[in-house]
Length: 158
Ligand SMILES: CC(C)(COP(=O)(O)OP(=O)(O)OC[C@H]1O[C@@H](n2cnc3c(N)ncnc32)[C@H](O)[C@@H]1OP(=O)(O)O)[C@@H](O)C(=O)NCCC(=O)NCCS
Image (cartoon, rainbow, N blue to C red; front, side, top):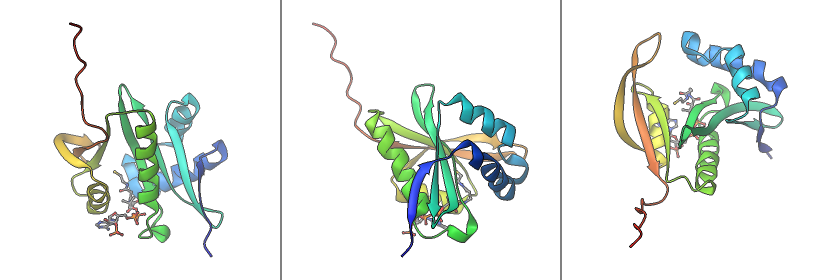
């Protein structure tokens, strides 16, 4: 039976994450220096999924200003198509809900069919396009949002 475990990424995992970034995103990858600095800063959660003791993917999420945001997500190719991204994004959504965030946000490249399929399956909707968001390629991003609870305006004091 497969052992699937979700845990925090620890400092010793960061070179692995940086290598996956380089393999998947080439010159748009997060550098190891950036990953280390952000991880140490500690405002984002760095979560990993492990299969039978092998790291299979990660998600980075947290508050970006005042919105709950998925900043990064990847599953290494050998472990795709078995629901692991769904588990990590599901955890992000649960945490957003626990923080009573009204909604959850992310960006995805317009040409990333797998990620778009994933986010649409999880109920995210396209809100707008950010032109040339991904550099250096100049690829447009779709900004996606999932509502977690309906907006209720504060009742003004009588
Ligand atoms: C996008 C990515 C994270 C999906 O990871 P995954 O673990 O294979 O996804 P899951 O198995 O959890 O798939 C969940 C759902 O996503 C959708 N999906 C996944 N892969 C898809 C594909 N290639 N095409 C269309 N939809 C897809 C499906 O709705 C799927 O549900 P189903 O299997 O019941 O049909 C993975 O392909 C990846 O790491 N890609 C490279 C990095 C990346 O693009 N990250 C996202 C940046 S915004």
